[in-house]
Each structure stands twice: as C-alpha cells, then as structure tokens.
Image 1 (cartoon, one colour):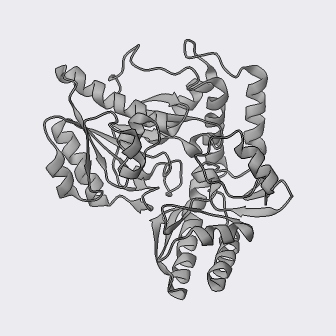
Image 2: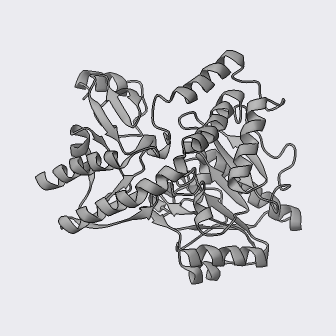
Length: 396
C-alpha cells in the first residue's frame, strides 16, 4: 500500500477526478499484478476489461518492440502495413465492412454518432435527426458520448450536450417503439450494459430492434467497447444473438493495453462518411495497429474465446454458490467472463478488503461487484478468487 507521503505527492500534480485505491502497481505477469513493494495480487479487473491476454506476454511485447524500432507514427495521410493488416482482421472478426481507428472507446462513439447523422443527412439534407439511446447506459466522457449516456448524474453539470438524443428503457421494446419518429436516424445501446450493472441485451429485444431498423432505414449502433473482443464467448457479443449491427464500436481489449479504439461499419453505412468528414492525428498509427494485429493473432493461437467458454460456466457456478451462502448477496448475472455479483449493501468496503487480501476487483455502481478478468484465467484462478472473496464475506 502506498504511503501518505507518496499519495500527497501524486495528488499535487494530478487532477482529482478519481478516488484511487492506496496501491501503486509496478508490473504484472500472467493474471497477477505486483505493487511497488512486491506484493502479489490476483487480477479480476484486467484494467477494466482491457488486459484480455494478461500481463508480460512475450509475443505481444516483441511485436510492439519490433514496431518501435521501425515506425511509431506517420499520420493518416499515408498507408502503413500494420493499419492495413489490423483493419482486415477486425473486419473479418466483426462481419462488417470498413474500419476507422480511434484513440479510445469514447472517440469511437463520437465517430459512430457522426456516421448516423451523416447517413441521415445524405438522405434528406436535414440536421434535426434524433438518436435513441438507453437509460442506465454508459458510452464515455466526451461531450458526444456523454450525451448518449443514460445516467443523468454524469451529464448534469455538462448540459445541454449535443441535443436530439432520446432515451428509452433497455430491453423494453414497446418503450423504444414509442420513441421512434420519422426523425430517428439511429438506435444505440451496449450489447451488455457495463457500468449500468452488467445487464445483457435480451434476444427478442435486439432481434426486434434489428427488424425495425431494417424496415425504417435506421442505423443500429452497438457499443462493444467493454463486452467485445471475446469476453462473452464470441468475438463480439452481438454474435450470440444472430444479429449484425450497422455500426459497432470497440476499444479496451482491442489493443490489450495500448490506447486504441475503432468504429466499424457495415454495408449500409460504409459510404456515409466522405473525405473531410472525420479524422484523427494519432488514430490507427503503426504502433497501436501493430498491437491490434498481434492481439487478433494471439486470440487465435492461444484459443482465447474457447477458454472463455470453458471457464465462464465455472465462474458462474462458483458465484451462484456464494449467493446461496450469504444473505448479503442478491444475485449474479452476466455473459461469459463479464459478470456481476449484486449485493444488498454498498460494495466499497468489500472491494477494499479484497484488495488488502491480494484480489483486484471493481464495482459497477454502489451495490455491484464486476468481474472482467483477463480472458486467459483458469478454473484454478477462479477458485483462488472465490476463496479470497468468501473470506471477505465471512469476516463481514
């Protein structure tokens, strides 16, 4: 744990937008983290669903080192081989058509919003089109992403936002239908709500939304920033529902640590944006796309998705056993290795207690512990996590 002196020194220079835990991590190996004092921690947070491959992966590190020696940045005025390779691998994995690389998930959402509005603008020349987003959703902190985030607490101080955003109830098809007008240009939601409490979309809901979008020429935008890249047992969560979006956003595990995101468009939306409509200085540079390309290679060679499908049911089983054992627990839910454990009380003390015992877990709201571990965890890692969490619950 960090000293007060270190903490105070850090806070002198960092804007206080996070209440950080009193630990300074130094390095990682496999699914474990080590702090500056050498203490070992089992990681079931993965940098908020980013480090899907775990830590200290030789092939991944070698690919980045090799690219550093060649070229890190050149701008989007030119082609580079890593960007081309990464684009084709992402297109193949998603079943969509074309990619734009961004620096983050929030920027991917910004791009998706622009795709929807430009698609509608090209049809009728109007700029008053609306996007339907979902209550309790989370899409990012930039102004556009914040505007479609369905939690007023996040938006309140930064209103009015970009405007023409309508919110509906997630998994409530009748409510969504009631919000659709001739001005609706897109329907946007997370395939699995993350910050909102780990709620997967219902199959009937997403399939009906897809049908409506086809009938009314509305774009379906799916946010897979947290739930994508193998976390749910498919490369992208929508592939569990036999649905293909018109626009998909991804980030987090896309680069397994480097800052990279993307929005990917299907056939309907592939020509919405034209030269001059969108851009990014750093987006898709050789360094980050070399990482993306290697991530896809390692997902295949290490059978990452297969491992998720093997370990996820075991994690669910063990969490269910805890729910039956402790009255303080309400339920567990989720999809693949994206799971929630809902408490009847605030979870903050439990998260801190687990950290002291060498387990890294994070919350989603005040009463939910979120499990988004590296996708390479084993059943033995699950047993170790459950043992520590069981100890915390017993002591409480």
